Image 1 (cartoon, rainbow, N blue to C red):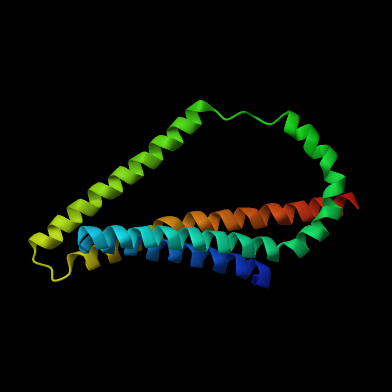
Image 2 (image 1 turned 120 degrees about the vertical axis):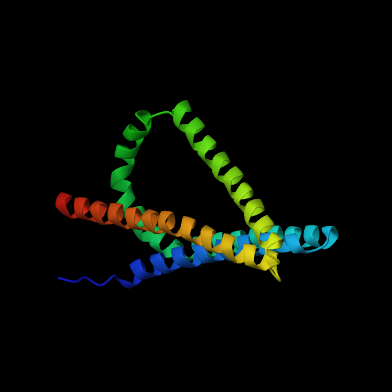
Length: 175
């Protein structure tokens, strides 16, 4: 039997794809700014940083306003679970320093690897006499950014939907 995703589920997945695409475009623009003279490159990157901050602020405000109605419904259901949550908070595990260290090391490795890859590709494009090496590099890095971000975002949405469904099943069982 084939099940079709509901509209809210489709909206969540679409939002994840759009966010990954947006990050890819911004990353590509950041790399593309490398083609500009120093002063213009710095101005372009400051503008990109301001745009990212603005998009984040507007996006979070939009998400908060769209979830206000959902929160009112969820507050009634959460009243029953608050006592359980308080007991769980007492038993919450502490952050393991090893996991934090490995995660930080992995993030640093990805950043360094990305930088090395960018330099290597740029040198190769320039050496081969590419007409617009920074444009080509920006497209490559945007594609890699999209391919790297999309699976993690989709997995996060999938897990959130699965846990929401299991919470709904638990509530029905308790009724």
